[in-house]
Image 1 (cartoon, rainbow, N blue to C red):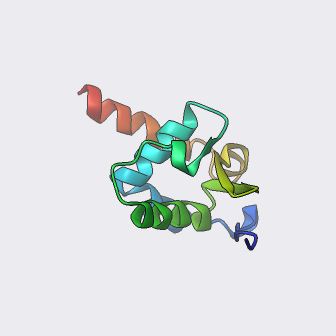
Image 2: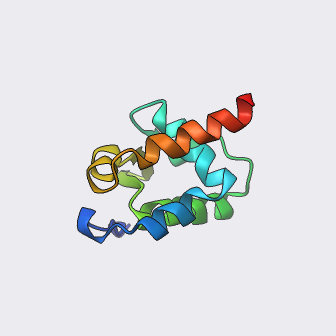
Image 3: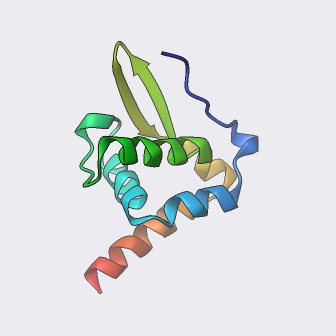
Length: 105
């Protein structure tokens, strides 16, 4: 397997992050990762096909929101929280809080 592309912190763009977080499936993936350190792609609860899930993971990774770590034939995803918070302070928290406010409200 080839090493997945991850943008550097300086290359993260707010437009890419907001686009990636605008999809409900991707937002649910981020919220699930927010509750843990990391998960394998197969352990994430997504209600789409494997191919569609892979596309969502790619969008999140290329936006700089998640890091993909390869171990054997498994892919582990984790949030790049510290990098996002340095680059765009409070953005991730605001988006996740807004998501939960909609559910509660």
